[in-house]
Length: 577
Image (cartoon, rainbow, N blue to C red):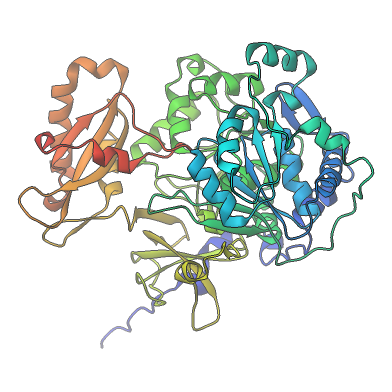
């Protein structure tokens, strides 16, 4: 008798990850209200508790709500109305957080821009959305002034990092960093801006589910960044899905926000989610990576969201080596790939310092409001980016098609659920290229990432399709496969695999390794190189073998802390391999 064939199991139907969630969160209804209204509802009985902490100054939830209403009134006094888009060029400060929710109250939208951009880059963002009001930090005013010329900008609202500081620190900041700008006549400062709204209405506009209250921009690694429109529903869905981790996130805990406001990760996970859950957000406006360990010791935050390099820096920080870090509950890495060896190194560091759980991880994209999966607490597997959030679905499809593949097979990771963006601003064709309505009516975001899911519902990211290296013979090489081997060498602190041209063929690329070694390994580079080559020969197929290795003092990073693969590729010369 021929045994019956085993039927394939599809993630979108089986949803094996739901076994890890309390049934009360499965299929939960998400509220139909603005993001501002949700933080009010969730904290109306806790108004005296701390919402924000900024350079030691604490703002209660009552303070925050009052300041948001004052900012909304000031927007109205400045002529901002429902449907307007205000461009913001700043780091994270209490004023930017108030502007974020105040714009939401009145039906306006914030267009978030990285303050490190050139005047030409800032001008393009302004022109794209037609802003009449520009908000910027005083330290970037000159560039913003140049950018705003010959645009729709009528007024410029200037912020100082000192605006939200305690008075004594504010005075010290102004002495240390005097403002030497020569301001144009259309400039208004925050204090005057707030005062001008004294007689304006603080009433909120009716909730509009189609309202995009923020535009954030993709990283731009494949061309000029696109503006991603995210709605109240998107951000509320992120926050309330993290509520399902009720044993990790508890009211009154601290979350240290080190991510900037111009990426979805920074606002959705670093601001809105903790405020919805009743946490205190410690706002770090501009992170100096060398001081991250000191900040952790000073504030003792239970939670932090960062990129992998942040946690590798913590694990190597001598100031933390003999410290009790048991206050840590959930430190999460997202936004970039995390080699297995680096993950295990961080996990070992955390365990040795009294931390109950290993490093949390997540996976998502700007177009999904940052997060679609999470590996947190005990629901964690090394090498995985976790299970889908409780109201999300992640599955694997044959690349470029709507053909779902069974659990266990490798294909393109696709995301469905309430966090998917409204669309790209002014780019309907690009929106349709990412968001696909499948024949069954389900909307999926096709991520461009290759990965697979195991039988328990844990997702594994194998490689970015755009990072995939295709050899001259057509074989496909995933950089993460090599990085997971290289990173396990005890002398390797960080590593990244990129592609280089095949010098013997006109087409095709080959894998090349960049590595940052431990400081004690400087005099052993030749020996380490031999060991790395031997390690790869033993553990990797012949066609995956790297053709070259290069040691660097540090890996180049993008403005948000991701490895800059383009810059690495530019550093390879023919004599290196």
